[in-house]
Length: 336
Length: 286
Image: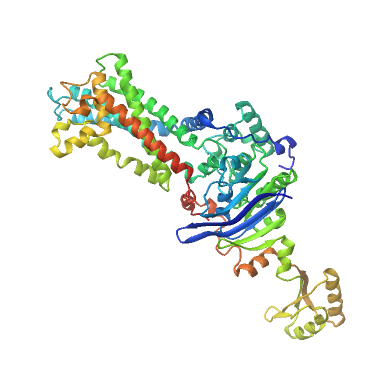
């Protein structure tokens, strides 16, 4: 499959901050790449370079086979962009916003109007279409912003933290839309700080930290990188710990870990549910009383923690995008 | 959202972007429509934009009119309003700077400039559309201001056509200054800063001129600056065209050729600042 998005060694510095420190990416046609990383990792800067909004200091990139630096205007006609800040005109109605975008894509006024109505219906905004966007809720604005990115059918889409700050219901609704787009064959680059989002939507994940891609693979490959499954047992009394370890040792693929105060024993295993049943039988045969037992697979959170040494949200402010005081920085590219 | 309409999900195939002047004019018109619509949604901006010059007319003519000596006449409210109006008109049109700078700065911070920059549209259109909408607003303001001035005793003495030419010069100056506003809006970090940055230098510019007092009353070293001020040329030209010039125009070249100098300055400012602004827009946000 041809690469719909290709980036080679992108570098961008703001003052002495290396927002992009040699980022290379490729996204095969019709797939979804999740760019995963905390705030300030360089995700947004990468998107801004690929969508022609920002000139990199060095490196090259193509989108749908067109060179981003040499033919930016051709790239613009092939992409849709929707960001974490819903970029809609709050003093225009939902319909006027979409119609304006359509006309700027060189559609006739009539086609732009028709397309706007279609999109408003799809995004459940028909009832609100003649109200100014100022009166919309955060979720509605985000939907309108995504609709604006879909006025024409862009073969390549960039979604920059599309669900940051949204409630679970709106998040789920946006995920469904995104999945529909991917089914239609759209190539998608998605940035997110939510591991769950990358896990659900992305075929491939690139973990970004401090302007570098520090890991790349499918969600499963990344999880495998930091080790497989573990059985976690919580025994009823502290004095049962040694015997429980003895019972679990035959199944262990490595050294067991014990947390004394919680009476929790963690043993690396392989073999899935079968091992878990066997382990339960063995513990039961030895009459070891347990409070809890489970098979635990690593989550992307574990992956992130083990790769970066910090959790995804510790530079936090998942809702930073909604914070008016921070907005001023955005137009000047400091928001990496 | 689960009931996806196939049509909506598929959508039209993007077309190759057009190029050249027709595409630029089309895109500018789309952006101008947007800005004009906003004006109707936020009428406060237009109303407050009107109140300020009206207030200036009343304050200057009634409070200061009796004290300021105009060559060739005894100080009075009636004489001063004749002298004053060209200056007030010119000051009003230059305040278009504030509208353009605040509007563009707001579009920058709200992410709309990013939206526009990611679209296959003309690189100049966001700015030309904005300055065109500002021009419409300026024209409305000038008409209302003229009506108020007529009520308080200002008169046109040399016929409608010359007055129309004067209004043309004023709008040209306003259009030129809105491009200065565009550059300011692209350069500052917040709409609030844009408003201050848009206005602060306008005060010395409009006061070190012939707008409110005769330049001959200023210290000698300041007089050439005041006479060559782009603002003074338009004021002098309008004063002559409205027939508000009492006695001969000051005997310095820019005042003797005020119409020419006014057009020249407006064109120079427009060309220079539109070039700088479009260049800045292309590289906006980094």
